[in-house]
Length: 346
Image (cartoon, rainbow, N blue to C red):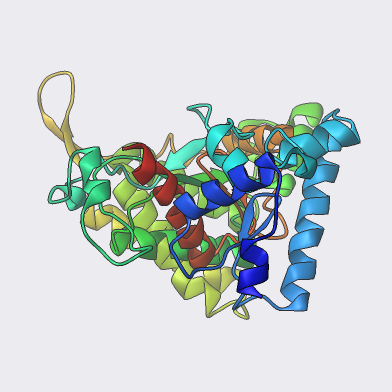
């Protein structure tokens, strides 16, 4: 069979595709791509493949909902070309893929910064760190924000809590990825519209459901103490709440407040007022129910404008590319693929 295949005549585009794939892949390895999305052939079964196909269909439908026709949506999902152009993986490398920019500088809360945080001080500072020796597929630890993973999270769902816990664990484990969180809550957005329509006074606005309360406490810590405190709180609470989903709303609220008090004390920032006197951090303005709901509603409207949603399960956008598997394993596989392309360009 090998002898027969070696004598088979192929056109120039097929030869170019084979040569390009040979440069990207390690000898003896296999790779399966669906619309440019990496699929592990060893771990994939028919049910997971069907789920991936449904994801692609849903992505196309969301693009059509924002005004694109079917052909345009299909081209965007294929990264600007079609399967008949004979480019496949090489097209991914040479052409600019379709990227979705969901970081407008307002609604994304970053969990870490590889270029500034102390926890990464001992990592390589230059891109030459991508070329250090290691096993094939091993992630390289470079103190650069090369991979930005933004998760769209509904904090009121079990999936949202699981994602918050995963982000904290990944940051603690020093995964070479910058994590961002983009929150949404259709409930908060709807209540905000109702409050505005009814002219509800600020003092009569309630604190909302568990997701809205979690966002409000997260935002207060983020504004007063920074991303480390906010992620510590959200991740620690999420880890506990996932194992107590059967508890009453009152019990979860008490646990949420207790976690907030614990983190706020350990990260208690001491600043100086206009007179140079030391003052303790205050949270009253950040914990305001009206402002918290407004911010969450605005974030939700922004998410809806992208055509994405984390309501049913959290979504992951990595360097502008939608990644179907938002779990840690799916993230690592996607980063490995991007790392190979970066190594070739360094």
